Image (cartoon, rainbow, N blue to C red; front, side, top):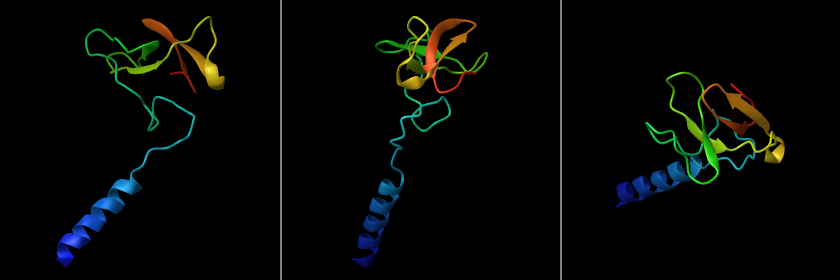
Length: 91
């Protein structure tokens, strides 16, 4: 009985210790990476676009940079083969 109780307690502690960050600063290397772009097509949901960190890398969906501006004080980043995206820094 004690063993089962201890296992349950450790599971609860482990799950709560791995919570996400509420930080608004989002970059490609953060915990709040968002969705990966669709393999092959680079498609992303909604108004997000695929941002690549380098040639051959898997991209991540980021908010689109519209008319050279981003919300939340982020930077509008350009990439060689893709739409401009918003991020806290550019690669």
